[in-house]
Amino acid sequence: MKKLDSKKLCKIYVSNKYELFYDLAYNLAEFAYSMDEVPVGAVIIKDDTHEVLSSSYNQMKSNKSSLDHAEILALRLAMSRLKNERLNGCTMISTLEPCPMCAQAISFARLSNIVFSAEDVKSGGVLNGPKIYESSSCHHKPNVIRFDDNHKSRKLLQKFFESKRKKG
Image 1 (tube, rainbow, N blue to C red):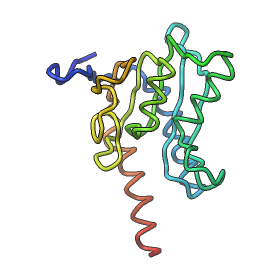
Image 2 (cartoon, one colour):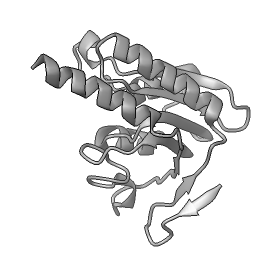
Image 3 (spheres, rainbow, N blue to C red):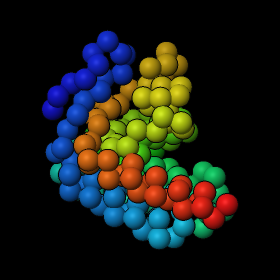
């Protein structure tokens, strides 16, 4: 695992060891796209066994809830399965940089790592925007790991939003 940007308070790494789990998250993002949801998928695994605890995709439109981001739904399911509000020793793999709401929820859940592929310059909360894990008010800072998917997630998101602009 290669470390990036050591001057920041938030440690950022680059790794491809999560490829199998990323593929699952990407498949969920493609499913979200087919359901006319913003194409984001998220998977949570146990670090020691690599068991998949939960997975989800954006369901804001279908559930009529602005809170139903892939990351939030995956967190809720993993907590329910473990019967614990803390997910110590777990990692989330997402196709997109978490927004500020999801980044804070990840911190509250005490995940060890957050892995994501596409950076979200406009609405992200980890590398962009409020940079939740660099805030002095953030009590738990997970390792931030970038996954190189050759821009596959970014291209899917661009395709989705381009189709929305064409519809007007």
